[in-house]
Amino acid sequence: MKDRIKIIMENENLTPAKFADRLQINRAIVSHILNGRNNPSLDVVTRILTEMNYINPEWLLNGTGEIYKKGVDSESIAREPDLFSQDEPKPDQDAEEIEKQKEIAVKKMINNLQSPVNKIVEMEQLADKKITQIIIYYSNNTFDTFIPHKVKE
Image (cartoon, rainbow, N blue to C red):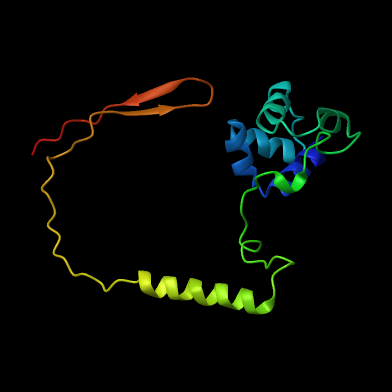
């Protein structure tokens, strides 16, 4: 199932961190799955199938069938943009039209440029802030509290 999850991430242009964020799970969980340390839990599988309701559950669980449910157009699925696919010309565009679009984009950028404005920025005087306590939370659900000693000024 780890390989199928990798395929989903590749098809969606998702990094492991973005994948975890999209599923609203801890990033470490995805890391452990991809490294083979843990198998995906029922919760992870459920979240994938809920968040990406176009994924074929049979394919995700067993590897049989197609990745997408019947009737789902893989081209219509919103994917995370990547740097390389944004400027790809469409097959039905000719070279002149592509060049015109590039020129228009450059002209818009030039028109949007503004001359720099020099301003004097005054810093506001903030009230003295002092640390009153530091709390450290540990993964085993315990914590320590540190209170600094008062220093005579």
